[in-house]
Image 1 (cartoon, rainbow, N blue to C red):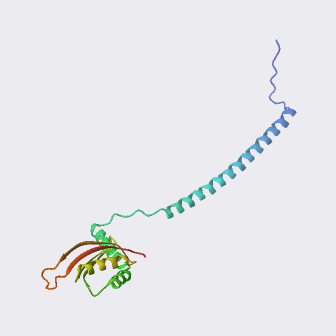
Image 2 (cartoon, rainbow, N blue to C red):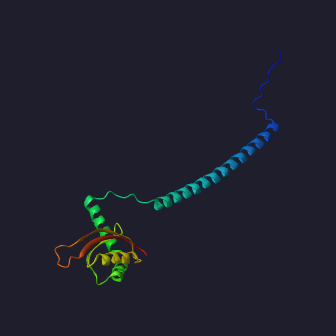
Image 3 (cartoon, rainbow, N blue to C red):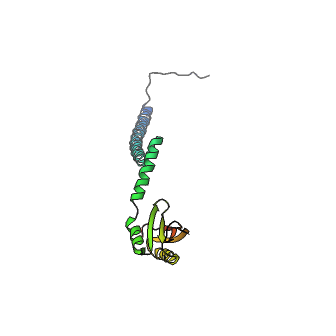
Amino acid sequence: MHAIELDYVRKRSGDVGKTALLLLAALVVLLASTGYYLAMEGEVASSEQAVSAKRQTLQRLQPVPDRPREKGLEQAIEQANAVWLSLNQPWPELFAALEASKTDDVALLAVEPDPLKHSVRITAEAKKREAMLAYVERLEQQPGLGSVVLLEHHINQQDKEKPFRFSLLAAWKTGS
């Protein structure tokens, strides 16, 4: 058998170059990895900032949820809206249509506009039936009114002249 030689002191000259080369390669890989890590960390930070900015913009653009209102407040709002609606009507057009249709044979007794239904109820008296029908026709020709319908009519027996009392309903054209 051969004897095994164990020499722990002897230096090998060829292994030092390989080791230095391997150490240099490891250092290059470490530096490249560190550079890549830092680049990715900067990219992640800028992406997080962009997401945060977009999230803030989205929160500003989303509507704020309505808080539940008290019942008294709801009623006050409905009343205010009704007043606003009645004030925001084409009153001049309605009055112009009534003025343009007037005649000496017909007397207006009541004008009851309903802004919510866009209609107006008119109560009047006429001396003769023909005057009543002519008045209805004149109202139909007015641009501020439409669909004029005679609702009821009767002879007022209590008056000595016995006039025709009648009610009609007309569509009140808004925005015309």
